[in-house]
Image 1 (cartoon, rainbow, N blue to C red):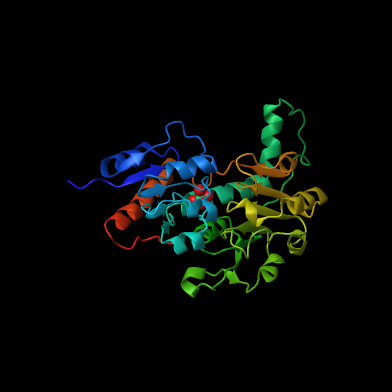
Image 2 (tube, rainbow, N blue to C red):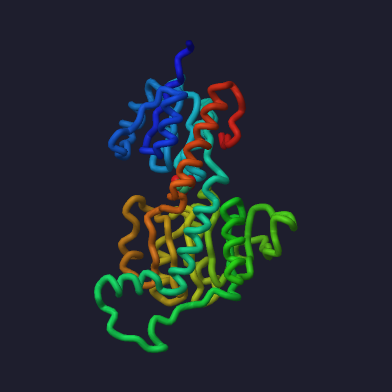
Length: 321
Ligand code: DGY
């Protein structure tokens, strides 16, 4: 019997996923689920044929340069791949895959949760109740923004963007979007295309980011961009914190340019941004967009499908480099 490929699994995955890995591979698990330091990541990769990481492991060009020749594949347990230097991996002949599609519903749900909680002051109300500080009611109390009939602006109309658009339509919102390519009429489902980010921003009562971080999009939400939004807009980010200049976001929330923000992702993770956390008009979650039982299993299985293809000598379905 030929030896099973050795796979480094950097984080604790669901039982079903770990079982499948144990059946088909020789996995090396991270029993206490700690985040590897850069040197530990490099060291642990030395005697493996593949690695199944999450976005918490950064494969920068120097890490990739230190990977052994036997390591064939980085099969990510994430749709985002901004933690991997794809050019360096490609140059070294390492296959990189991700897990698209399977997390679109879960992430769209979190985007809508962020929107609604921001619009209806969810964080403020929750904290008031927990503090036992609810001592007043009037029609003028805790008045928020109703999203019905408002314009929902999406930057990045890929799979997650499209599902989120569908959910927003369910709230009676008009969908506007910017994407590198215009969708066809069937995919658009009536959404209004804007051929530039700046063109979209003035039409977004709610702006929701669904684009990847690339050299072009890194930090693109600056003060100038926030200023282009309608006054009292709502900002939602479930994509990546690195898309946003967080100082500009804090300023827009403090000045009232933004009514509120709903955030699942931050420049610094884990941890977040204490200046954002200090603001009443921010609803915050700890990067849990895809954190449902069903989706975690589906992500793990999709990553294993990609490993299976690579070790069977086939092209993996979700190859990104
Ligand atoms: C993703 O898949 O990119 C999510 O952010 C979780 O890593």
